[in-house]
Amino acid sequence: MPPGGDVRPADPLGRYADADRPARTDRPWVVANFVTALDGSVAVAGKVGELSTPVDQDLFGLLRSLADAVLVGAGTVRAEGYGPVRLGADQRAGRTARGRTPVPPIAVVSRSLDLDLDRPLFTRADPRTIVVAPAAADRKRRTAVAEVADVVHAGDAYVDLPDALAQLRRRGVEILLTEGGPLLLAELLAADLVDELCLTLVPRLGGDPVHLLPGPLPGGLRSMALDHVIEADGQLLLRYLVEAGRT
Image (tube, rainbow, N blue to C red; front, top):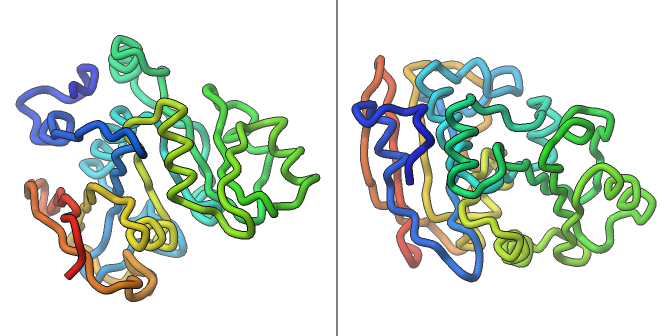
């Protein structure tokens, strides 16, 4: 799938744009994108920004340009100060030419609906932000959120991720990009809902003691098949496909 002109064919990041992502009917194809230090840390002072590099930022933007929605946990939204997706003019035009919205919406997973509804993520997003919440979430809070976002109810006391993704697929989301955090990634992996892991390994040490996953996965290890490795300025850009079954 072409990225709309922002990544030249000679650019190695074009391999991400051209990758085969088979369409599913039950849920979207789920791409997880993370950057980690050599010691496994995924944050510095609670944020990813100190780890990210220009190459990683290029990949970040490219994957967003290919996605139909971006799935993020509420904790990550609060920690990183998430706003609406921004893309370059060529990427926006490329998406429009493919029949997509100029930018993908952010979909926030939240059990409590503890969200700052005055932030641009809710006041300036076009298309509107999506909030995924369980049916048991506070009714008044749900009403307030529904005024500034599209609310998807999935599950009762807790968010039912398989149901949430099925609903997103019915809304036309074919490729879903998740950017974290680690808890959300672990829940998606535990439910066998991740198809692809894009991991940027940066040559740095000494970040927060927060790793890609918060602990062991229920049911044991997941097997990954390496699709490609790209070296750029001392960084390794790794693309893995999640293999069926568990080891």
